[in-house]
Image (cartoon, rainbow, N blue to C red; front, top):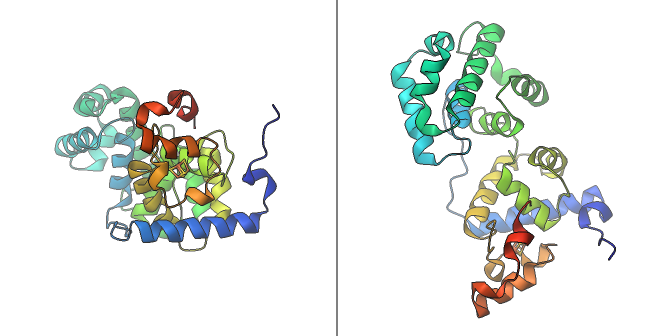
Length: 255
Ligand code: SF4
């Protein structure tokens, strides 16, 4: 059967911009009490914590970050630390060797660029320039870079992880093969000043409603806007029980 054309290929940019605004408004109303403000965290701390949070639980990444800061309270010392020792210290966070290398690469790149870890003037570096610099560091991906910029520098960006990637593709806002492509395709569609708020709303939406497996389409505030072909089947499953959804694994994996 010929593939149906998705909204992302048939609708113009202005329609999709309107849709993103509509989605942002609905989610803001649906999750009114969720925290939408950024923290007052130094950029180095934020990026390091985000690197440590990859593929692990919040509890273990927090423990790894604490262990790192206890062992090396000064970033200068962590930058010069023995790599094996660094990896051993953060082992509880998983992927320890890879993360230790990423953290040390980051710290050394900051030292080389700024001379110290105060990063004076970083707030004046334009978004694209800073994203390019950060993603040139081995071990720092687009998601980590944009997430740190969003929360520690208050940049108007919507970082895209696997959850946002899944949701935005199901909705038909984008038709992208990777989170990085989703980030790039989504970026020009977000109303000015609303990117971080959208990110936070979508994170909660993915955890509570548009889950990877067995999404709660039956209670979704975006049901009428969503293009996902399996949404009716998932909405009906509420009445019949979760086993009524056939091949759930197949339809949700890879999105
Ligand atoms: S209808 Fe279902 S798949 Fe679509 S956005 Fe809502 S929960 Fe996600």
